[in-house]
Image (cartoon, rainbow, N blue to C red; front, side, top):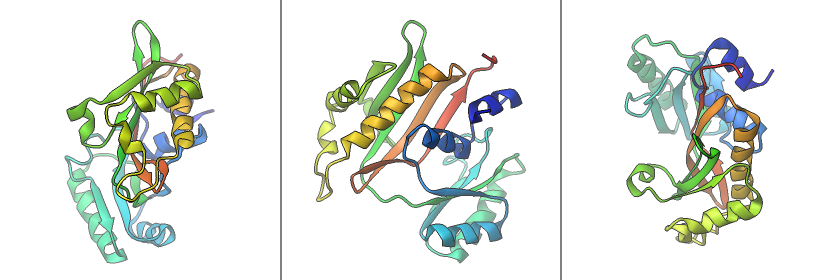
Length: 227
């Protein structure tokens, strides 16, 4: 049984971030290295294994607005900083249920993109690509294609956004690996075709690490009905 099927059986309306990225990785999308832990001591072990600095997040299918609720701590440089962040996030949860804490590698990069999937009432699953991070809603610089898409479509989408130059050499950084980026766009389109219970995907931000696009955060929304 797939992660999607298990979540639908449980009645989840969305995947946790950990589940979402595990699912996306299984479909060929490059995601951050991370570990889901249940204790502060395990978090420190995970941090040392991944290598500091790390990111710490509360994780669960019902947890939304993590940043606004201070459920995300970044640039944790040491075990001591990680322990303090763990306690602060627990306090900020206020007793809300959660699956555990997500210890995640800290991806460094100035360029942030977004990849998504929506289900249009007329056209069905559609793939979205554009500028990510805090600029997604502000700039609305995006391109769409009806799924499934081929590599040709994915490359066209990259050239259609107004900020397409950000995919080239940027402030001394190498150009984005368009082949890897195209694979992610194609994979998201195929998910839309293969999993009717997936109603929406929001991979934001996709940070360019060197030349490689890496999914740093991901949301997968499910339909209520079992298909």
